[in-house]
Length: 441
Image 1 (cartoon, rainbow, N blue to C red):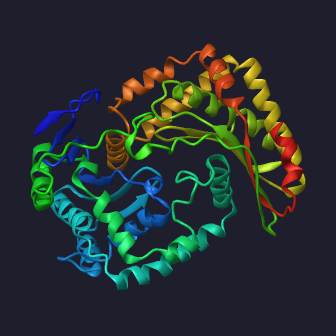
Image 2: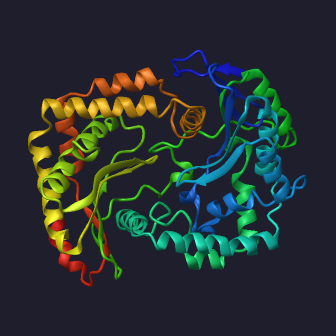
Image 3: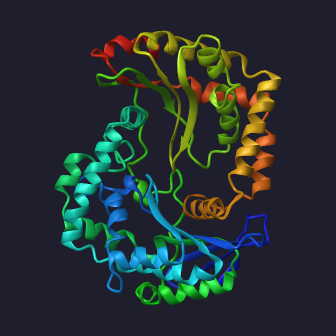
């Protein structure tokens, strides 16, 4: 039945839990004439064992290939006829199928997306045809060194674990997986307790709940006593038993005859619910988050050693990443890595200047607000929060947490995270990974 969404700090956010554990979360935005809809599945690439590697992303493709009621052409033509946008994405810890339509066409979007999620045929001919498409996607990513280096960094940091493997799978795993294995993954994971329907825009919450309940009716009946899946948190057990990886170190070199060295240097970061994430965010932004950041100024502006340089963070249920990316001429790689290491040491020992702390907070505040100004961003915020956080933090609450970060917080998180053992990934025209070993000391 419908219930309020605690922690939202907004009267426009509402939530209902339907029989079977399916959750519906909405946000009313009266100033728009559209609605963004997403059906979120609490399954990502890190839920795969070795026999199902790549299955989650494969399913993302196959759900567009037809149901018992619609062919692939019917699905796309129905959405095109109302000028709607529809797509999907797979992450390491969730999958999302989404659409954006005019508010009057929301019933159609709910009907189409729910039909895809609950009634995909997953026919052998579609599996065979889409195998080639996915292999092309892998090849396309493999042709982009800046994508390859992040994948290599993850593999170095997390090793041969589900978190360290590619979201798309590998050429070998995609070629090996069968229709039955993909279908098995679908049946076991796409169940009401693991589903969240999120919508934001010009909508009525009760009407959305009624539409969702009608669309999922037969599926919900198979799970009469089920409860929603619990948020995925550090130490929550279940699917995460044995998946909390110890951070790896060392050098991962991908030798390529290209004109630029692509480099990621970093370490294990923070889990997504760690209260220190706001301090790390401010620190990361000041260190490498913009044109005024230390790394940009020292590497690009003062020395002209690279066109692209930035630092980043990523959070998962039980771990995270922090790192620096640089793209530079191969002959400049050693100097660039030396500057990166020097700037990290400085911020660990001395923290940030007052102006840097203020700029870091300002950038985070703006990113929080500007990143939630449209229905699609609001829908993504709702869906992700329901999937992976114990509660939805209101925007004002997030802004207050950012504003509360102090110099002491920054110095503490720099000492706790940036001093951790490092992993280094390099993609470029190099032959000897040992040549980069000194960058880790």
